Image (cartoon, rainbow, N blue to C red; front, side, top):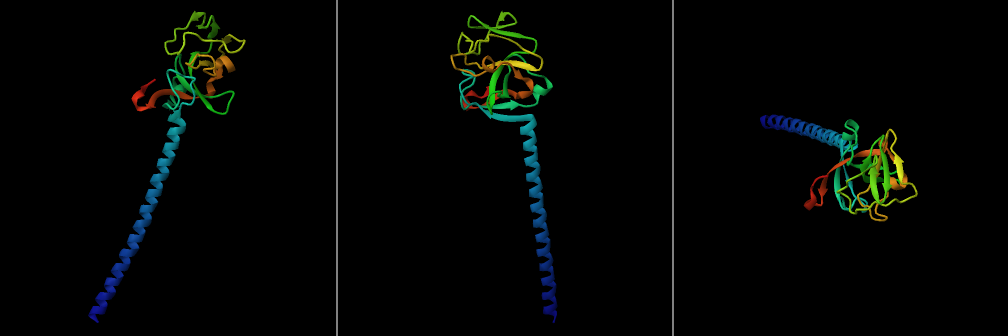
Length: 195
C-alpha cells in the first residue's frame, strides 16, 4: 500500500513536470516568435527609412563605380540635410521602372549648360576630377537646362558616347524621386570605403 501511494505521488509529480515542461516549451516558442517578428519589423523599418544597400548595374558611373559594386545608401540624410553638389544619389528613373545612380551637378536655381564638350554651371566651367573623360557630349539638341525648385540635374561619371543615360536625356529629376544618398562601398572588398 505504501509503495502504491509513493508510486501515485511520483506519477503526479511526473505529470506536473510534463505539464510545466509543455507550458515552458509553449512560452519559449512564443518568445522566439515575438523575437523574430520584432527583428523582421526592425529590419524593414531600417531598410525602408534609414539605410539600404544597392547593387550597381551598368557602366554609367565608371570610373567611380563599376558594375557589381555594392553600396550603402543613406535613406534619411537627404530628407534632413538635402542633397548637395557632387552627391551620388539613387533615384527612381523617370524613363524606366528601375532605380538609377548618378551624381548631382545642379541644384534649384542653377543653370547647367554643355558647351564645347564642357559642363558649365552658372556660366563657369565645372571642374570634374571624377569623370572618365575630359569631354561631356550633348546627347540631344538641348544643351542648356534651368534647374527649377524641387528638382536637381544629374549626370553619370561616364561621359563617353552612350556612357550614361542621365539629365542630358530626360532633363532634371524631381527631388521626391530620390531614394537616398550613396555614401559607402562595401564590395568589392579591395575597394571598401566612403564615396
